[in-house]
Length: 266
Image 1: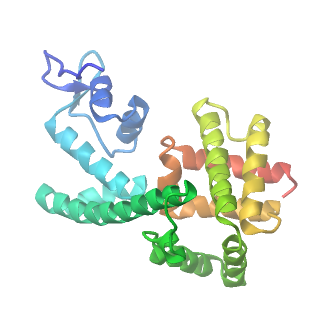
Image 2: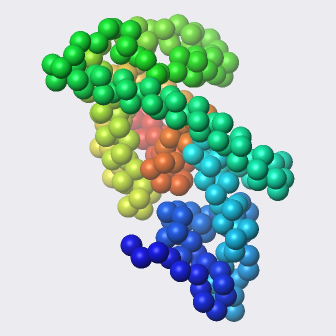
Image 3: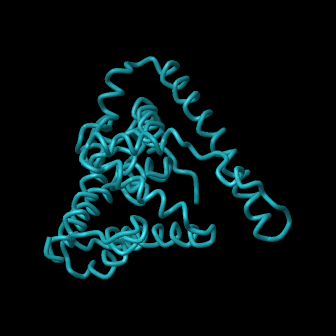
């Protein structure tokens, strides 16, 4: 792809040029404008939006926050609080990314060693199978669920963990792959412009629903599926993960799951 050029007359980037430069879709840039997160420097007489250096730097800040898992609705507040000292902001980003890089390096080593074992090239110690994963993050999710739903949530979590822990390595890998495939298929439906409550989504949602039940190791009633949709909506990590498919996918998925739960009788 040719390098985007600045508009020769205005000395600014148009939406299309900025999208090409940053890798962000035109649709996302329009959305950022609509919610006040990234306004253009000005709008020309031709009604084109134009972005200058200040807007480019702000977009970089937005993308750093997105990469670090900050929900879109919180980024504007953070940027307003951070002020204009970009050195402070960038140093914070660097610390967070360095920590993530180290964890990614450990996970890559784990992946490479697991591939080597499956290929018959080496034998891993059982403890090395999980090197690089973050137990503190798992604990954070569990505490959040218990605080949010109370009741017997802790017992349900332990039941699910025990069931998953009993899986063989190949079966666990197959379960993870199925979850990614089920989510990816729903993301394609979203990108195709299909409404979340359209029954045409039912085969895809049935697949996702069945996968959830397999991971829980017990049936997933319609009410529980609706509750899971609320969890996806409320916890920022889920929104970050799902919106990597496409901006707005989380909201669409939640609406689709709830509509499907209703059709199931819940």
